[in-house]
Length: 420
Ligand code: PMP
Image (cartoon, rainbow, N blue to C red; front, side, top):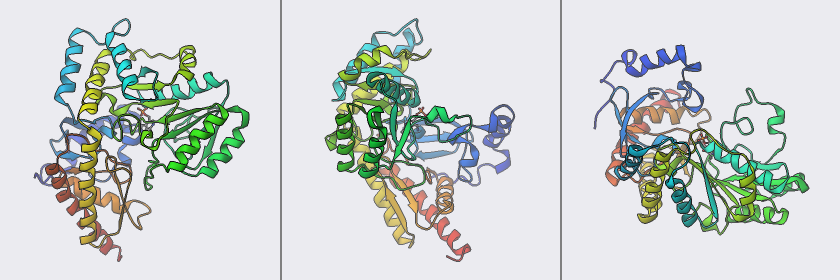
């Protein structure tokens, strides 16, 4: 494996030069979660290429990728079948005066794949889909209140952005909060909403940044469904991050709970820009009435890529393979941690894992771990759930575990410097 430390001096890297140029022409040098200030030391901000489960930065350093573009890459970067489908569509047209045949085919694919879905409509970003679901739920019920779990991420629009800059109280006037997996607090919020309850909006599992991931309890999932049924409100599942990685039918299908509306994006087109809303017949008329559109929402290339992605995900048990690779990573990390006498916590579904260090309130250990592992060729994240893809094979996981062993050494060094 390439050792990266000696390749380029830190000040002369292409990444550093691009950051300096970006600082002049892009506010803050970069927006949102990708701002350099949020990255562990040594992490690149700029990338040049990717193939399979490997991503290469602008300085030519290659990593086994455990972020998968923060979720969209499900089958591996530049999956040949998806690429061929996208290129074939691009050869005849992408952005036309309206949708192509592929839109109807893709809607048929979603309706066939997702048991709760009687219809589907398409957008570009996850935030388009979550916002659309909320709007359709309000239109369909004629009510205003939407219940969301405290700390859950549903996008960067004013009604749901984690930042309050530029947001008015009115933007969030009709949101009520509950604690994820806490039936009592959900019931309290339902009571508070009373006759004005339009929807309960919930992520497929709890994946708030920097805290242990939590799978939904059966009791919680059924309580959310029952509350919506009792009030004739909409249960909306935000599958933007989870969709197709856990269960191609929908993440709560195994719990026996189906939503009325569901927001999808990220993995559904293996890296091409696409989002989807699926819904049942109760909300068909509302979805017809709400005026929803976007200049690029009919893009045929992403839809062709999505059809190919869905087909592969259905026939090859993608979630099963990714889960097995995630288990191999999890077990390997657990072994390394115990060999080094370091206390860690691993949480979440193996397909979307998170490893946190005990007694690490400011994530200093997590960042030291990631920086050292990065220098040895593995791209992990210290606080956000990671993502595996169908392109990861056992040898890639083992290579990443070798990189992780250097990460654990860095944590030992940090501990000994701090006298821990
Ligand atoms: N919902 C969830 C659960 C997400 O993880 C995200 C994005 N990370 C979104 C919504 C918003 O998606 P987008 O950034 O594509 O608008």
